[in-house]
Length: 123
Ligand code: 5GP
Image (cartoon, rainbow, N blue to C red; front, side, top):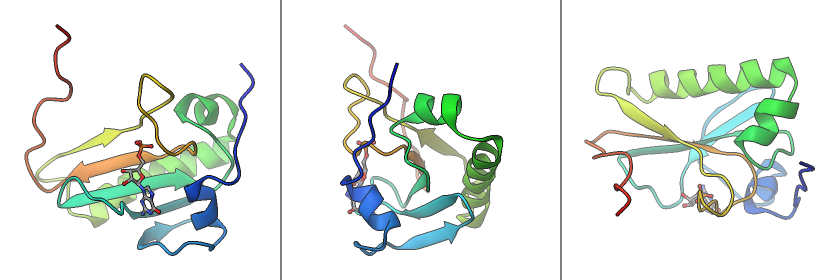
């Protein structure tokens, strides 16, 4: 599948500095910042700086350096936000079925409260 990246998406604008963000950490290939509408006491979005639409796009086409940097950053966010002890959830929505709103790969890191079951059971 060919991926088409829309460079006008909101996270591309954040990466270009056109829209402010509350940065948690930044590395060579990755930015982590607080979600503007947090759904838990801790709700951090981790995004690669490269133009990747969704998780499979990144996992299949990003460089080894980007993939290592991104995954390490997710771990660093979990540690920095104090989530190791109490637990947390990582979510990455993709496409229509995943109800992805912003077409730039992002991982939600959620914690700070009990998060309930992962999904509702289908009928
Ligand atoms: P999705 O549904 O695509 O997985 O999640 C997109 C997330 O981006 C939502 O949780 C939403 O609150 C967040 N978001 C949308 N616009 C902005 C913004 O301008 N700044 C920040 N920090 N988060 C945003």
